[in-house]
Image (tube, rainbow, N blue to C red; front, side, top):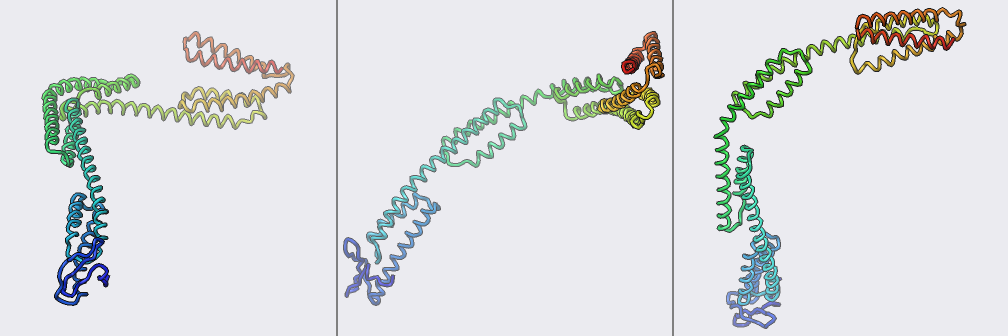
Length: 402
């Protein structure tokens, strides 16, 4: 403000006074100019105080300042203000400093509590790291992973601050002891590993020899199962030295590859044969489905009999196609049976030559069954029984229709 007479005055002899709630007090003397210039001079000094208070308050409220240091500065300013050679709203600034004193004390208390909390948390972190290191030292057998973890613990340890020196030293002794214990135990383990590797090498050589002996086998199912069992044993066995392990594994894998490659070739050829049979049977089905059974039931019956003979001669098809093919063939047989039944219904039994022919076919089928039994051929017996049952069923239906 330009009118500083509200807060001070300069008397005739140059004495400068500051007005406060408790009355006027002398703050200096001015002889260098007018009274207004004198008041302005002491007002600038007051403005400097205000600026310092503003800065302290802003830093304190933003959290950027150290609360304890700010409290010291506020108390210093508050003490100095009572004797300060300034002209201004000293009472107002004193009230601000009193409020800042309370704020700084609260912030200092909060900062102290936070520091104590941080110290407690830092100590808890180091205690947790020490306990983890001690557990690793006592129990871990994953040597590489455990060693890496101890290095990570050390790196993390270095980042933790704020613990008192005594406590930190005690925790460090525990961590160092755990790390040294782990190192000794790991060394003892690797000291005995060479012997174990030699034993493992001998065991795996036996597995390799057996696998090589099986590589030329043609007992596909049992050999494949045995090779898988050998693989399981290989995985369960300890490792030999790096060089020996790789050489043995190359031999073991080569033996397996040789067997499974040959098996794959045989199975591929078998699959190709089954696929060819499937194509042939699909062609026969298409031919059978194209027969007009209603126009000529007897001719259709003869054609279907011929197709069925070729059907059985073709052989096996892929398992996943068997049911579908059989369903289509049964549908054709059912359609033929219905057509013949309809034809027989339109013909007198005595005038139906098909009955006599069918009885002859049943008799022939019975003879073929007897010959198969006499030959002791189980497959032919099954086929003959199936064929006889079908012809007997046809004859029965024809006779019932007549």
